[in-house]
Length: 366
Image (cartoon, rainbow, N blue to C red; front, side, top):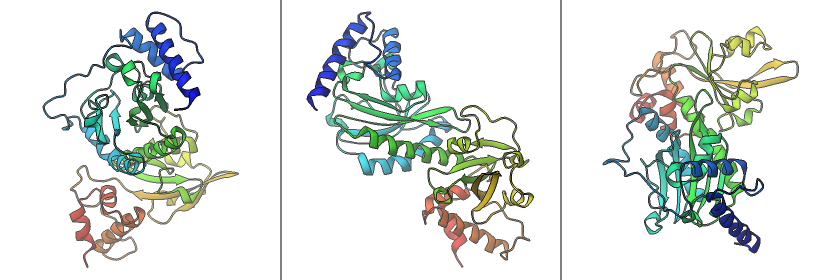
């Protein structure tokens, strides 16, 4: 740690104690989100010198009772693995919390040797009223990425901890949880923010792909960004109404950032397209360019139709008149397209189609 950073950390420690005693905090000392968290911590009666308080875990903490928590854990797991391969290590942990601050998924190594990090476990809730300011708490409260270094935490106990998080969003743009890295050491925060933002978009896309009752469309101005975390996703009801849009799609079409979408037919969203282009929107095939206006267009690809309610159900059947031969042949083609979309990843293709890996392999047999 450089001399300037040490002086800043010492100034934070002194200011925090004055603040806890009822003093006023200089506005330039902390980011606004962290200052609000300090204020909430003080209002909850938390004192900087106290030890963190954690509620006891249940008998089976890793067993998630809420289906929404299980779905979030399932969708974030792959991104946690990728982030861990890049940034994990001893005395570090990566985890995901739900909207109430409970850890639903985690990767870690060597936490048993670090007392301050040992309580971070699946099933535990990280609340400001118990442990003061943390990055996940700030992300959940303000819907913004958060970085909390050393004495920016409200408890003295976390003076050696680095904590960075980004929010996760649900189908209606609501804050669904947060993705976090915490450890005793230093990381390049700017670099981490970029990777964690991509991971959050990827997780949100998986949540959209699991929205089974709808058609799914991928959209992007640049076709190279389709099938990446930067693709826009639209969920479309059978009647043609746009049910949901991810963050990228909301920005592409100028839709409200948060909240349920207004009653919006798909044709109205693509009002600038030709009749032929609108007819192709819900048809399988390669990505195609669709005009939005005089000087704007997007590339659109139909990903899949509505899926059965249960993952073990059969693949949604295509009309037997579609070019491509028998129903069995069409199903096998759908499986191959899904595999191509996910770069040969069998698990991801099976999730998209709503079938098991065993069923997927069965459809590939000659």
